Image (cartoon, rainbow over all chains, first blue to last red; front, side, top):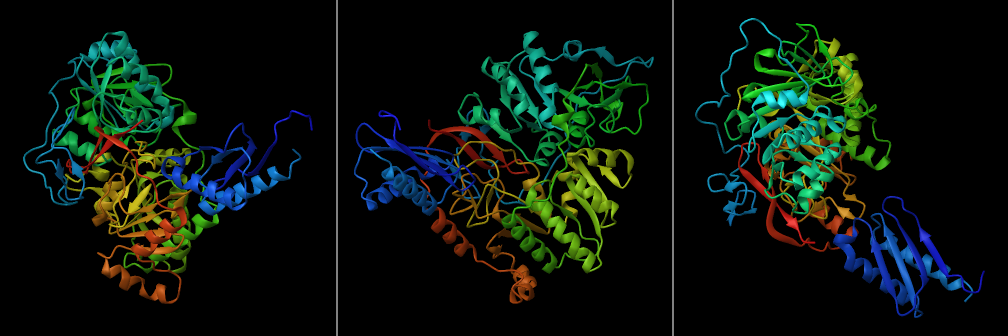
Length: 93
Length: 520
């Protein structure tokens, strides 16, 4: 890996009722971006699911979480965020 | 603000639509006709048997006497392949004709080329189904007056009763002759049934047939006779065949949808209507077609034959007729090439007008002869009200089609739908838009089983044996709604302004609901 390459990890797919979660480095704090059709009606609960999952994993470093949602239920979103974050955390600094 | 019988708040005055007092939905069968049918201007043909061929669309628009502020109508059998709406509107713009009300049966994505003419005021009002790009434009509040949505039966009722007067009808004609006779059966743009165009031809002051296949007089068989037609315009092409007829419609292979179809067909089999002579409508969707496939198996097993299949006809129904499982097809719209070929060659495949198909105010509407209809919906609520017009984000994206008419006419109306579309639940406390009231919907079928409208106690009794043998899981509505909520979580509300962007009429012309503009 190059010294200044951006550290990213992802989990999930763009299949119906799934989502693609990408975790990458952030300059400051935790940033969440959500796109997809269900976001208009579920944005707050999706953000809560993402934050709760990351908090439970003890994620304190500044990261950007980008979710391309295709109708994932809450449990699916949580699982994808957890997998993406664990992959991210394993990467060398 | 008033509350109608579907418990919806309707403004007393809707800008661009008018007063709603005396026009509020009162119940599915509350309103009955009175007075006499309306009529078009009387006119006579040239005494010496001249030709009605006037030239192209431009010459026809000029000869028609069309002026700014008038109402012009179109039919949608050429679907997403239609060139006629776009060409006529463009021609009007070039001739300086504006402030038009357009009265199409439906607009599709192909018609997005008229968007600049909506913005520039050539088209100022739309009465008809708006799908795709124009639906989004309307939802965003870019049309000055609300769109008026009517069902396939509500539209001819509005014309026949005089609610809507058509100044000029432009009929895309896959075949025509110099006498103005029209057929949809032949030609490079063949579309089969001309069902939606009949009432327009009978009731417009001026009728223009636009054709790319002018044949010698007289053509046969004739769909719309020249006695209604004033002018014939000839163009190179009225549509793109690839957008007119769809490819072969297939039964779904998704196991979840197959399970839903199986439960629905079991409910039909358990009902008192599953007997020799059963009639049904299933449309072209994946689940309804699968229901037909399961029913076919049950019909063979119990040795019964259907009397007719109704509505939009696909090759799948043509096969059912050829195999002797239904005797006749009543076709208002031929969806695929197989249906087009069948209506052209088989006298058991009957072309019917939208009036005949679905108008509640005539003496022989076909939907009233219907035993079973399988429908879809974007949402159903705990009162069994169905929404087919607006999406989860509140935007207007679909027309009513025959939903209201078949639901009201059929003895058994089934909505078959997965409980969730993605994370969006299909069963909610309250639908965003009421298209069809719960009083005419008898059962909802999801992957969890069959939910019968408590109003239909007879259906519970009919389904009892199948329920005991576990062929039909019966799920109460409250349980289904709770299950949907538990899986998807609470939905956040849609924020809307007070501005009405669409009026949803019940098939009798009363206002069943309005669609408000979504806040940006």
